[in-house]
Image (cartoon, rainbow, N blue to C red; front, side, top):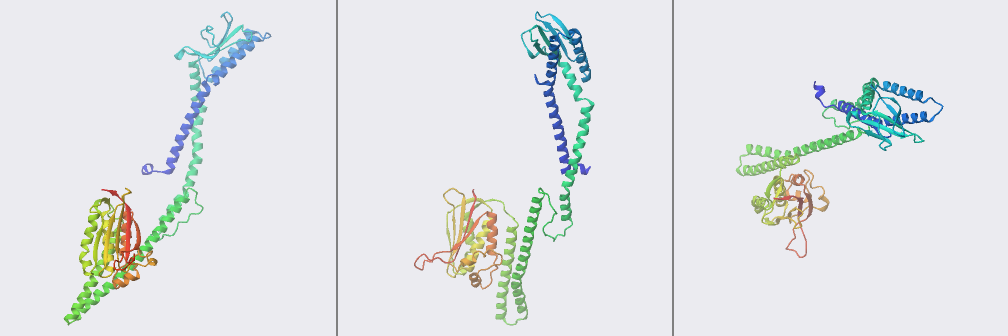
Length: 475
């Protein structure tokens, strides 16, 4: 029972073929009916015209005994009626002289018709008693020939033809004969797909090599190509994650080694000053480890697509809150924080991603900026109605050399100036996190020169400017 309820391509194709076969038969029957009953060109009317022509030839041939010849024609009509299964008369003819007197008749009995001036094919009467008539005059216009056939006779002949043993046999035998080649073609055509599924089932979870299918069908080739493309992307992702884990382990090893060393120093030291120094180093190691772990978790959440829902946020409030949270750190470095933008900018946007971008960019600017420098967050919404937000974080620190800007978004990648400014304490994950958050926002990232140095003449600019642009709906 389960096999019958499970969707099947083979069963679907066979059912479609059955429906198509029945529709084709129905169409053929309709066309056959039209070809039989069409006025003037149908088989019934052709037969009536043929009878009329034969009767006219008999009347025109003086060498033939008229009565005997017409009687023979009547017998032929009766035999045709029996052959096609019509009972009670199939076709009849009547001959009238110019005065309208009936002079001869044959075939089925029908009431004589008066001359109403019509010629050719027409219908008299209504309903079951209706008669199809074909009327013509002899060449000398001395005799009027009426060939008549009832509607009931036509329906009887059509019904007998459609329900005949030959027709039923064609219907019952034709479908299996047509079905078997199609079923065989479907089964053999789906065999490569079955082989592909068996090949995938036999693979180990670690086997991400491309799928090889010998002579795949043209319709199957896109599936194989897309599957191989997915396997290649998955393999690249796994390699990247392995490299990430290796780099993370390497980065965590240093602060953990510092923590372990300072713990050992604290246990062995008897000098208060030495213990205080070890405690400070231990605190720095713990802080660095916590920051690195938090960055790793943030990066993992962003790349996993967690918390992508749109929220009603005010970008101006988010920017000012971020600056307030970093105020103590900035004051410790003697760095001035500034904001340039509207008092309020409500939008629908992934709030967590915006906060992540701001906290990492402002934190990096403070950490790697020059002492007594400046960090400025600017926010704008163009007046052209495009709905594009522009967020910029700039500083006047050492910046990033143009040659290095193409690589700073790589994990654990630190520029030379940043490494020097942080004494090697940075993790190299800040801009990688910013890039992952920007992908959630659908934002473009641009790197440029930072703030202008007002202490020097001219338009000299120093530091780094990180600008994000993304489209968002106003709240």
